[in-house]
Length: 50
Image (cartoon, rainbow, N blue to C red; front, side):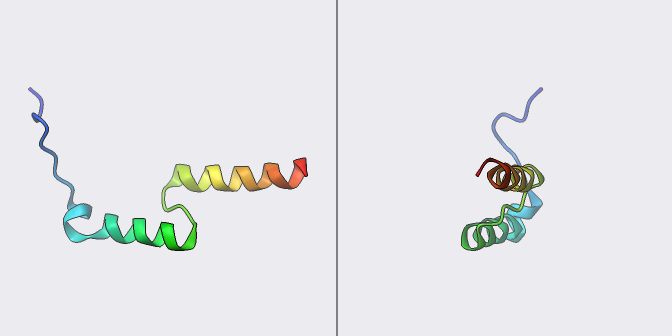
C-alpha cells in the first residue's frame, strides 16, 4: 500500500530545506549535488567554447 499523498520530511520540519533554498537563491550556488555538477560543467564548457 502507498502513503496516499502523505509524506514527512525532517529537514522541512526543522527549516533546513528552506534555509538551503534561500542560500542558493541569494548566492547563486546550488546546494544539491546534481545542481553543483551542472553549474561546474556549464562553466567549464563556457571556458573552452568562448
